[in-house]
Length: 184
Image (tube, rainbow, N blue to C red; front, side):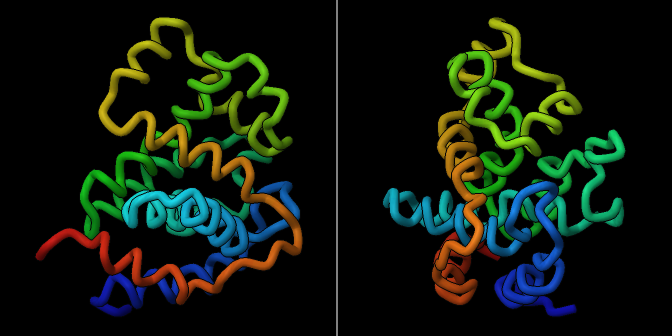
C-alpha cells in the first residue's frame, strides 16, 4: 500500500471500482467518474469534484460483498467513506460524502417528485437508510453546514448511472484530488 493518498485513490478506483454498482448498468469506477465529470461540468470547487469522485468509496473499503443491500444490509457506506477520507481530506470533501445519503432522504421529503427519479437501487437502499425524512429531520438537515453541497452531490450521484457514457479517466480528476488534500 502506498503512503501517497493520490496514488492510493488512483489505484483503488480501477481496482475495487470494477465491482458492479448494485443493479445499475455501470460499475463503481464508471459511476464515480460520471459523478465527478458532472461536478466538473457544473464548475464546482475542487473539493466538491473530489467528493463526487469519491462519494461511494465506502462501498470499496468494506468486505460485505458487491451488493449488501440485496440481502438487507445497509453498508453505511457514507460513514465508511467519511472515515476513510478524513485521513486525507478536510470537511469540504468529507461532509458532502458523509451527508449524501441523508441528502437523498432530504430530497425525498423536500421535493416529492424526487422519489420518482430514483433508480431501483436507490429506492431499495432508501428503505434500509430510514426512508424519507420527516419535516423536522429535513429542517435540521437543511441547517447543517455542508448540507447543500451534499444535495448537489446527491444530484450528481443519481445522474451518474449511464451505461456506456464516455468520461475522462481517473487521471483527469487527480489534480482536483491533490488540490483538495488537507495540509500535513
